[in-house]
Structures are given as C-alpha cells and as structure tokens.
Length: 146
Image 1: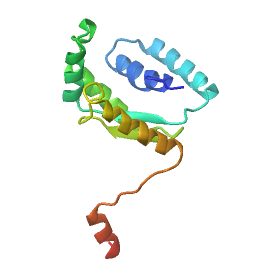
Image 2: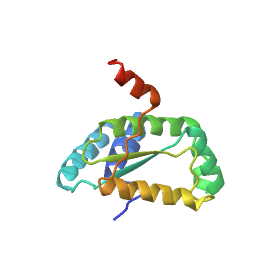
Image 3: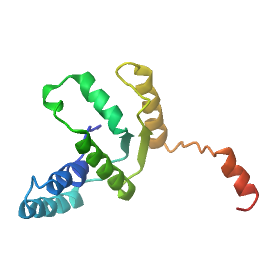
Image 4: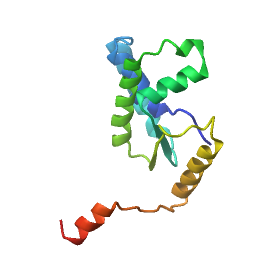
C-alpha cells in the first residue's frame, strides 16, 4: 500500500506546526500526542518512507500551477515552517529506511519520466539494491588517510 501522508507526518509536522502557531491548545495538543504515541506503538512500521525534498519556491510554483482556491492562501512562512519540521522529523525518523529525493528539479506532471526515475529508486531501495557514489574529493581524501 502506498500512502501520500502518514500518521507520523500528521503528528510530527502538521499538528506540531498548528500547536506552535497557537491554533491548538496545550491541553488538546498533549491529548493528541498521547493518543499518537499509543497508536504508533501498535502500527506496523512502513517498509519505506519517500521524502520529496523541495524548496519553498518550488512548493509555491506547484501550488500556483494546481490552481486550488483553498491553497492560494498558504504563505511562504508556513511552507518554510513545514519544511523545517520535515527536515527535523526525517533526521530523527528510524522506524524504516528513508529515501530522500531532491525534488526541485523534478516535475512529474510535465515529465512523466521523472516519476519513472523515482519508482526505479524506490524499487531498488525496497529490494536492497543501493549504489554508492563517492565524490572524487572523498576518494582522494580517503586515499591520503584524511
């Protein structure tokens, strides 16, 4: 099964951001977190989390292109807050492997081949086929004992 959003993101990013903005009271947020903690103990972990990392500018362009009225009010500050929370969450998430995709240069709508590239990387990750690519300077530094 593939999900667009997970219960982890809802609690760690979206609810957390609403709480930080004062949109959720301390009591309600605490209750939500307690429920989330209990629920997450019983959920089987995902096989893989795919994190599409995109800049605020890219997110704004995509929102404009979709043309959804309810999304037009989303501020760059809000998107930046979400990005910060996503980065923090993904850096501490350890329930399963994470595949981080730099998505600024990707456009699945205009270029379906971009989705094919991601599907290939997901399949490789799920089957345990990873390719290590070292930067030339890393190889040179490793050879010199640094």
